[in-house]
Length: 599
Image 1 (tube, rainbow, N blue to C red):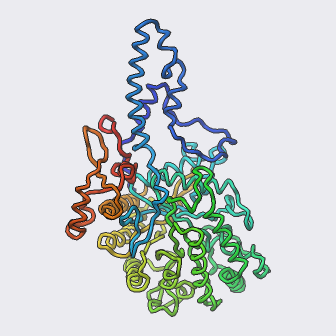
Image 2 (cartoon, rainbow, N blue to C red):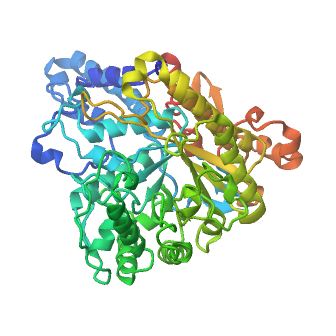
Image 3 (cartoon, one colour):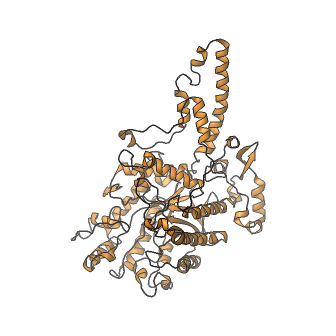
């Protein structure tokens, strides 16, 4: 397996300043169980300043220097003050540009313009990952579980998001609803676990800190907790449950494992969700609670938070037409109704259905579904990619790729599945296309046998290359997110069959993909009429920084993209100095740093 390349760290700078100022530069003290329950509030100064002012006998302006006696004491104090003043300037620059990424502007939401995603008046290409358990991960505490480095879940999540930003990833998809019965967000109709909500608040704040956008899934199709079947059982207008529901297993619900009587009952009951008025009311109330949530850390309403890229109405919605023929009509109607309702509450953010991208039985592309013509199961899920994407209120199309689940492991099919949706989008939906999920099973027992390289990496190569080919040629497929980044929060627990960790060789593919997608984003200056800046990276007097150079943008505006060569050959441009100096998302991995040359 490959490993994550080591890169130059800024820890040396922090330790040098902290030691000089009287701090030991160590990690924060371990909190008590009561303190750990409190939400994380980002510091506006940084631990190094607190350490400097609290150091015994050696603080700035302490009496220690004067007690040494006479002019010599004054000289030492003045010399120390002068050095620390200079260091203070560098520390300010470090935290301003090199430590924490500047947050997105409040009006800087990702938009759709034609068949493109757009951010800051220029095309934006999502390159990211799924981490559906991220909210649950935040709530893991070292005094309750064995964790890596005896760290809290929030620390491990923060480190992973910083790493993601550093390699060029710019978006992640998570489950707002939570599917872990140990960490339930909505405990009953209209009742929410504030502790879990605060964990979601934390994730959004940390994503903003590191320049990552977030797709939030509102409800799950598969799991009971946080899922469709729970809403049906909660509804006051749905039929009462007459059979005990089978317990959830690891992974998605597998109805094919039920006996036929149980399967028929559960499928019919599941279908009630799409037409039952009580379920609709519960879902709309849940949407309203989410979009009007005020983040307990940042104070922002979710609907006003530009960190959020989009809402998924349901993770992989299903309504089985083989048992309930009405699903052909009820599920598409539900998608249209809820997308419009969500837009009425939150016009700032994009919306997509969350479906895998199957075509319905009456769609001319039905034969392009998995396992056709031998099996028609994919045409009987209630989905229709074309109709669902064209629904009013839906901003872009999303597809998933599951070679193992669908028993379609041939590379030829995987690539064709993507290109077929590109063609359908170009011909019929005229909306951007996003590969929201793709993954490949490798069992942990096979890791040492090279199966990651033999089985998983070829799928990741094929999907990322298909996306890059589209982006670099101006195609309608605009981005991709892999399933899934496994953030290890429990010692001794493996990543699972789909989990990918940074020490897997798969991350070499991800890192290359993210870097090239990032190059494509910064290759195009903001449109001239937007009157934004034109900032480019430069090394000036040994300082890694950014400066405004309108000549670069003027040349692009005059010649146009066709005359400027490929996207990756362009001079990288950012609309502001803050964006150019953003750690990870800007010109430098660690942000602009006046001291970089001297480390």
